[in-house]
Amino acid sequence: MVVVVVVVVVVVVVATVRGGRRWSAERAYLRPALGRPHLRVLTGATATRLIIDPATNSTRGVCFIRGGRAQEVLADKEVILSAGAINSPQMLMLSGVGPRDHLESLGIPVVQDLPAVGQNLQDHPAMGGITFTVNESVTIIDKRDALNPVNWLDLLRGKGPLTLPGGAEALAFVRTPLAEGPGPDVELVMGAGAPSGDSLGFLRRLVGWRRNPLHAPVLRANYYDDERDLQALVHGIKFAASLGESGPLRRYHSRLLRVPAPGCERETFGSDGYWACAVRQLAFNLHHQAGTCAMGAVVDSRLRLRGVRGARVVDASVMPAVPSGHTAAPVYMIAEKAADMIKQDWGQPVQ
Image (tube, rainbow, N blue to C red; front, side, top):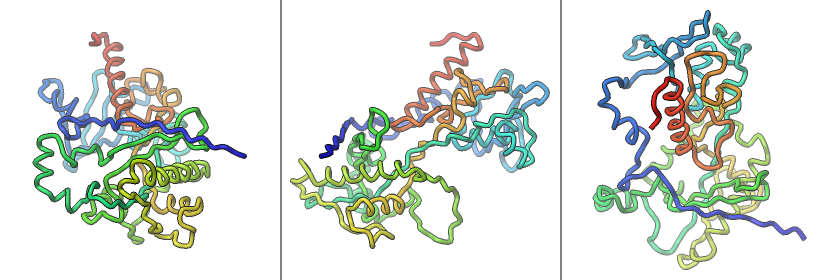
């Protein structure tokens, strides 16, 4: 007899929220600094590449487009590249820093051959659509709650259903039999919404469920190229389905909505084959991209670009591996640490 032990770690939903509203990095860090005389923020500008002197491999500044005009800004000391795990490697490659073969195939002069730039892209794929019905009005219904002026007044006071962080009422981390390490490998998020009840279209716009066959494809991520990743999600979904119909939720007669996912009607509902099909049909990502300018391969331990002077990368791309949880707080930590290192390297006191 085989005994399968499922370990569940339940945690409080922690978010960057203040007074019931999202408190972003822009609000917490940038707005308080806007009055500083040495800071200038340009909006509506698209950075295109770093200006690197090929003779010395030194970064001199940044090229950008604003108002339809190509412009540049020069740096006295160094350039901090913080464009995220997608655009930071793109910027480096446009600047001539990246895999030599790839750059030469695009006609980009090679400044520094760094094969790891743009490689090692990691993310957290997700699957929505596990929906439960209840017999009491204890859930959030978009038309009833989002259009209720009382809830908007409550939001101004920092309370009420509209203050839920990202619509997540609860979450748990689960270790499935597919986990390779000692910790959990699946996160369960109890969200206040479902595709079947998305009458105002908020959820469809959030995750891009338009399903128009005429739209051109943008990215083929191959999230489930490794069968183990798919099976880990199947185990997590089955656990979530059983959890939703058990324990304290029974008082609400919570029942899994047995409406098959589009394209999975021929599979037996609830079977492993059905859930694997549903994952492929209803999958989306959490935009936790990381790893494309990994520390060690692309930047050093102080986030300085290898082989090129005067440039650092400070964002999720420097993570060698995507963290098991969400990425916002770790990125804030990376930025805080980078600020200290920059001050240290230029002889300034660290507070």
